[in-house]
Length: 113
Image 1 (cartoon, rainbow, N blue to C red):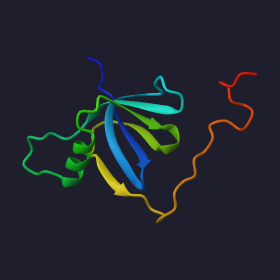
Image 2 (image 1 turned 90 degrees about the horizontal axis):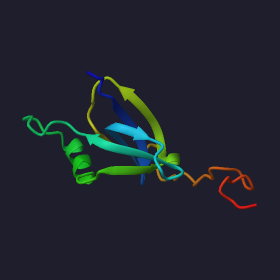
Image 3 (image 1 turned 30 degrees about the horizontal axis):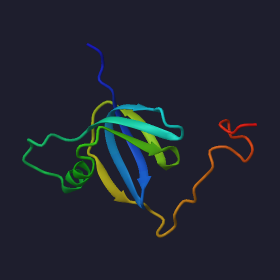
């Protein structure tokens, strides 16, 4: 039986840090985005319900696939077992990262010459 891969994806979104678990992560078909599929959440059958995980599960309810901007990804790890998905506050106060160009000016591979 093939080993089941679980990826922990940590990314920034609107002043918060999201930590989610997924079975598939790839560069996808959209340039500049990471494709995240088959999100994994804790079992609902447990007696103890974590409100933080329930909040993120509600936010991603019905989502088949997410495309995350490459510059928002903090880290992607392949892990042995799933942890708890959560949303936490981004440290640094009210400072927002300025959007960054993928290529220096004049070197865009999609530009016609």
